[in-house]
Amino acid sequence: RYINLHQYTINHTITIAHDTMALSSSSPSSSTSTSTSPTSITIKILLFASAREAAGGITSTSIELSPSDNNDDDGCSDTKSLRTKLATLYPKLGPFVLDEENLTLALNEEYVPMGEVWKLRNGDTVALIPPISGG
Image (cartoon, rainbow, N blue to C red; front, side):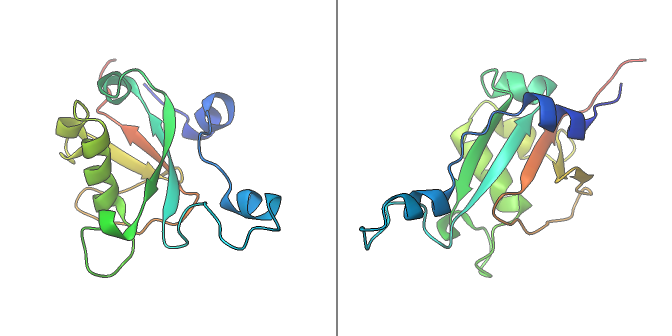
């Protein structure tokens, strides 16, 4: 079975994240912004099959990663810190997302190879893809 991530993203994504620039510019008289910290990033998450079921049936969401979510000392959010954050936010998803053999990540429609940790940038899209069986 083949999943076309691009087609899914276009037709079925619900964006929950907000545009911090729009929030800042909508209140020009305000000198302080209540928007996301400049060091935080927002990642769009797409969930498929058993990953979707474990997360309570949601097909997509957006989460914010801050420096405090980081597993490393380099100050950059990455796929490892994303897996940890998702396991915290969705405990039933934890056993899947923390085990690379049970769940593959696709970052901006490119599979992240097992054992590799990739840096994330604000606005990235990550798909959670469990093993697909069938014939």
